[in-house]
Image (cartoon, rainbow, N blue to C red; front, side, top):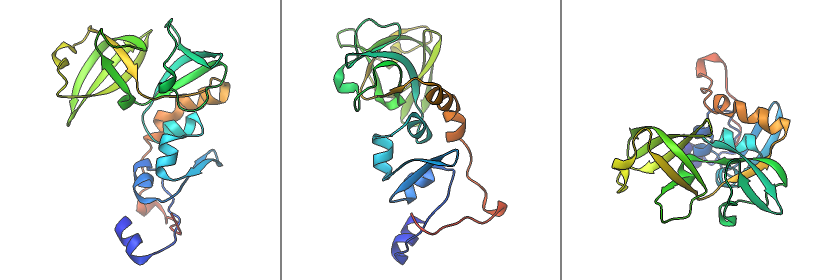
Length: 206
């Protein structure tokens, strides 16, 4: 569809509930939440620099970690050491906050490497070329994507303790609006696209 659109040199608007479809087809995307535009930008801008917790969760799977920000330093709940500044995207808000981090931005590290948090393995599954590792921390489930050929894969088994480093995360205020949005992100993001036989789709630009 994208190749046809480019060949015909059309200016069009494409309405979809499918995030992967939107990211693949559009030059610019407007993300709507309850009838209000949350953010407009290129697919890369929205994915890498989301303006809200809703946008970040809508465009991909996220882990949600409670944290506190004081004097520009962020600490995850239950951890004594502050998060490395290099892992923070943008300027975090002061006070109680929520840290959103994608599964591929979490890395299981050895004892000699600095870690941001500790967790326990619940399950490990092979998903194509990657491992899906489900962890538990303070009663919360955390998902991590890892390489299948990592040398310590045999040590990833249910009940094994692991240490995690964070490549990149974004921190948002933990107010009522963000909390409500966060609980609904998974269901919204996994909503199926509207079938074509259920009504016409407007397609005027992308």
